[in-house]
Each structure stands twice: as structure tokens, then as C-alpha cells.
Length: 306
Image (tube, rainbow, N blue to C red; front, side, top):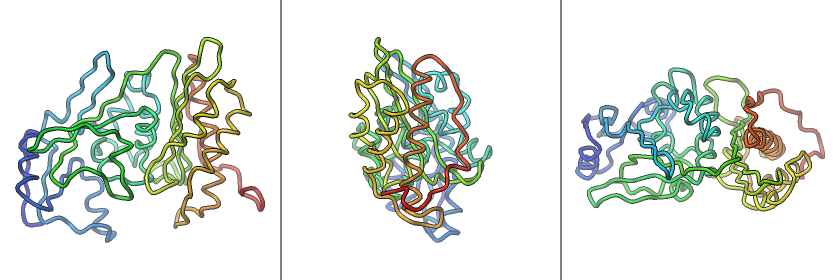
């Protein structure tokens, strides 16, 4: 690294991005050195540290939902009564990121722009149909999170664009959400597979709307739309959860890597989807229950997957 800048506003950061080709923006910096040491990315020649840009730490609540500044930390999201009561899946996910130190320093904007397929916040943001605001000297534009994520470590943001905020749309009554992941340990872990679910119940107790998204199961976090469509109009019971989970499993082609085989991931997608749906339905019905522990999931046996 040869140059370091610490802008105090988003506009100043955007100007620096436009001036210095190849500059890297960093906020909490929880992945910067780790990625460099692991050979994933070289340390940038120009580093723009935005932790002092106070306008990126704003929070705006209105009738349309909630807008979180890009510098909002995972620790804040985890502890926020507002997030926990209205957008529970995001609180579930933020509570699982790294360690307490990681959550205190790591930011929602940084998590999105790193664009890991195994990111915990990605699937919840997809089921909320959240969008982001990108700033450059050309102005601002709004992009759905689903369109921002382009592949492992890649987004559709232009090199001179700065992510400034994330918007969570308001949700209808009788809506609950949850995020569940499979992990090998409870701290400093990356999801083996993860699932976020959102369910809105109708007056008759049936599923009026549902959304399901998966992490660590494809090159990006993805929606399982066929599974969502199946659930609408059904009673929210174990049978409907099982059928939806089977469709979600068939919607992705997970890879084999050091954390798990593709076969194991396919089997466990069904488990985490079913659990996320069960918690989301309970919350939609007004029962605040904890997300179940995700270690020691069922062992995969021969013939148990297609």
C-alpha cells in the first residue's frame, strides 16, 4: 500500500474513488489482511478508509421501511430491538458473523461488497427484497441486492461507485422471518449452507406469501422461487415445509470444497430450509422463538440424496 485516505463524508469518498483507479474501500477492515495473507487479494496500492464518514452511519425509519447506512455494524443489527422485531432474519444472521470483535467492527455494507456466496446477511436481504444505494460523481442509483451480487467476490457496482445505504422495505402484518445455517462451530465460522425464510400468514392461517433464499449453495446467495410458489395457499406444516425444502434443494448446484461435499450440502439444504420456515411461521403467528442450534445435524447416509 502506497497511499491511505480517510474521508469524512460519502461525497469525499466517492471523489477519491473517481480519482484513484483501483483504490480499495475499507470500513471495519475485518477481511482485508485475512484476504491478503490467504492470497485471495493483494493489498491495494490505494486504501480509502470510510470509517470516519459519519453520514454513512445514518439510520432513517419511515413509512416505507428502514434505511441503514453502509457503516451499520453487525453488532448493532444483532442487538437492535427494531431489527429483531421487524426484520428478524437479519438479526439472526448478524449474530452469527465472525466473533464479537468481528461483529463490532464489520459492517453491513462491507459484507455486501465482499460478495461471498456464504455471507450470512445476503439471504435475509434477499427475502426482504432489500436494495442498496450506490454513489459516484455521476449521481446515485438504486440497485436490488439480488442484482448487486454477481458472483464470488464480485458485484455489479462500477469501480468508482460507493455503497452508501441498504433499504429494508416495510413488511405486512403477520409476517415472520428467520435465518438458519449449518456450521461446524459457533464462532469464527463460515456457513456450510444457510437458509433465510419469510412467511406471511393470511387470516385463514394459510401461507399468503413466502420467500426463501440460500447461502453457500451457489455462486451467489439465491432465491428458491419454485419453493416459494409451492407454499402459497398451503397450511404451514411439516409436510409443506418438507416439500418446499425439496424444491429448494433442486434449485441449486452446490460445490464440494474444504468445508463440505456437494452431496452433504444438498442434504443439509433441506434441513436448514425446513427449520427456517418453522421459525418464520412461529414468528408470524406471534411466537418469538429462538433459532435452533445447527451443529450435529443428521448424518447423510447412502441413498439419502438424489
